[in-house]
Structures are given as structure tokens and as C-alpha cells.
Amino acid sequence: MPSSSAAAKLPKAYDEDLRATPRPAPIPAGHFISLEHAEPSPMMLSLQKGWKRIVGYFKLMLVLAVIGAYPAAVVISSDIDDSPVVFPPNESWSVSGVGIAIHKVARELAGAGWADDRARWHPQARLTALPAWQEATATGLSEHVKLLSEVAANAYGPDGDLAAASRLLMSVPGEDMLPRLTAAAEALNRFDTRASRGLALRPSPEETLPLEMALFAGWAKEDIAALSVRINAEHSAWLASREDITAFYAAKARAHLAHELILAGKARAYGLTGNAELAAALARAEASWKRAAEMKPVFLSNQQGPGAVLPDHLSSMAYYLVEAEKASADLAARLTPAPAIAEDVAGTDAAADAATAEVAIP
Image 1 (spheres, rainbow, N blue to C red):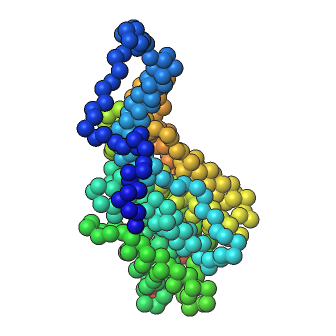
Image 2: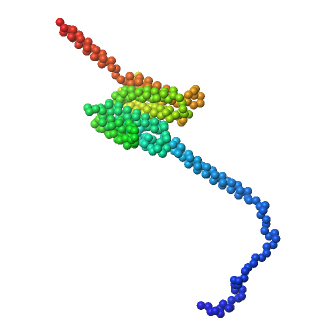
């Protein structure tokens, strides 16, 4: 430890006088430059203005994104898949109509989803075209599967799996369609599996095509009536009302289903395509349903007038369906056996019985 004498040996310059108060030296006049007339850098001003604009644009885009997010979600969620149904190469169906039904159901569930099952806040709950498309598709499939169940009837009546699938495909108010459609697809798959193993009657295209054409003609007649009501109604909305959209896309859905079922049946109707007249009638029906199924306007229009600017899509759809109804009814009449033969036979038998009775009378 240093002794107290060591501190006495330090020079005077190292001593600190804490009592001394330093005083600033006087500032000479003109030492500082006057800043009264100084201007900021033009580059900094431009950068500052640019930054404010960027921040303003960002805030505006954020507000527009928040406001337009829901309408954009509504538009994006309206996905109507009207592409052709194509079976994978490794997939085969004993009854082509069953395969079409399963693919149509799977496409709606795996694609946009079932719109009527959505909550009220969901963007799809605001749609009109997609619910009409899906409802008409399910109803058309139900009617067609019911037709198949009657053709494939056994000693106990219509086929059980097909009849159950037909009931499940029909919507019930207050019930979700997802479990019903899933159960319907399973029932259809069970029937096709049994048909492939010979455990169920497998309808042939020659049996089903006349009945299908009569069913399709009925669809066209029903949709023409619904479209005519909307065409002749007073227009309360521009470009089209919700009722107009519902009528158009319901007709389009059934047209697409009819066209796909015709193609599926035509591919295996070897006995029908060999006849030139029947093949030509089948080609006319296929072409007429295809024209109606391929209508896909960006904005649906149902405006009265000459149509110089806006087309009348409902009138065009109705015209195509008139052609489809005529072609389908004509083909159904050609394929259905004429009942006059049975009447002639019955008349001949009655005449023979009368003649026998006259001979027997003395």
C-alpha cells in the first residue's frame, strides 16, 4: 500500500481544484453562420415526398384489399366445372351411367364444394349460379339413377343400391348434402361392383338409351318452360336477375349431364351405331345437347331489345333446348318398339275367337 508521502511527490499540475468553475471564452462576432435563409436539399425533399406517397398508396391498397377481399372471394369460389368427364385408362365401369354419376358427384365435392352446405358468412353463400348448377345436377342424376334401378329390377323390384342412391341424391331441406352425396356414391359403387361380378342385372345401352332419350326430352321441355317465363317476365335487374341466373344454369347443368350420358351410352351401343338412320339421329341429339352444354357466358345477359350490344343468353339456351328436345324425342320414338304390333295381334286373336264362335253356333 503506498504511503502518504507518495502523494506529496506528484506535480502540481495533477491536482484538481474542484472548486474552480470553468468559464467559457467569449465568442467573437460573426463566428456562426446565420441559418435564417438556409434551404433544405432538393434531393431530400423529393425523397421525403416520394416516401409519403408510397406510404399513402400502401394505406389505400390496404383499405381496398380489406374492402374487396370478400367480393373477390365470392367471385373466385364460383367455379362451375363443365369440362368433359373422362375416365382414367385404368378405370372401367360395368354401367357407364353409374361411372358418370360418381365422377360428377366427386367433381363437385372435391372442387368448389357444395355451396348450399356453407355457412351464411361463407362467400359461396352469396352465389346464385353454382347452387343452381349443383342442385340441377343432383336432381338430374337422381332421376337418371332411378331409371337405371327400374331397368335393372329383379324379382324383388328395383335394384336396392340404385334406388337408395336415387333417394340420397335428392336434396332434403335442412340437411347437408355432403353425407348424402357420399352415401349415394358408395351405393352406386356397390351396384357396379355387383354388376361386374354378375350379382346384379347390368342394363345394356340398347335398353337404357330409349328411356334416357325420353327423360332428356322431358328435361328440355321443363327447362324451356322455365326459360320462357324469365324471357317474357319484366326485367327488374341489369344485366340479369337471380331468377334468370337460376333458370339458365339449371338448364345448362341438365344439358351437360345429358350430353355426357349420351356420349357414355354411345360408346357401347354397338347395335345402334351400326344403323345409319339411328346413328344420324343419335349424332343430331348429341350435337344439340352439346351446344346447350357448352354455353358459358362471362356475364349472363337477359335484356330485351335487338341485342346490338348485349346478347340474350336465355333465348339462345331456349333455342338450343328446343332442338335438343326434338332430336331426343325423335330418337326415343325410333328406338321404342311400336305398340301397334301388339294391338294387331290382339285384334287378330279377337277376330279368330269370333270366327270360332260363329262356327260353333249351329
